[in-house]
Length: 167
Image (tube, rainbow, N blue to C red):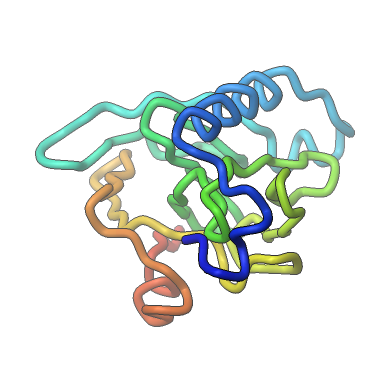
């Protein structure tokens, strides 16, 4: 989503995006971090199972944390009695987001936009929260619809509803 204001900041191409995504995954897999935050929102690798059409199924996360599926470019988060599915890329210029375990938030490494674990925008160059996928619970799994992505500024109601509330 680069526009005239972003032309000078050097938007990354697909190859750069994939390189950054691979580096992000490697970094996330090797993160240490403070024990208190590591217990509350750890980061794990995820691998979804492709179902019909463009749906990916994941096991229902048993505890709070962040799961990254680098193959599908999906972030799955269980946070404060809810589950969210996000696009891996920052909504500002599609750079792969980074999970900062010590700060318990996401950040874009390119322009430093910051997001809460539920995808809410905190600060930076982005103008909206992280893009959320539609998802539903099916027994003990989470089904993410890769065809239905909600952008907070274009569909605030859809974006707010794109979560699974846990009892």
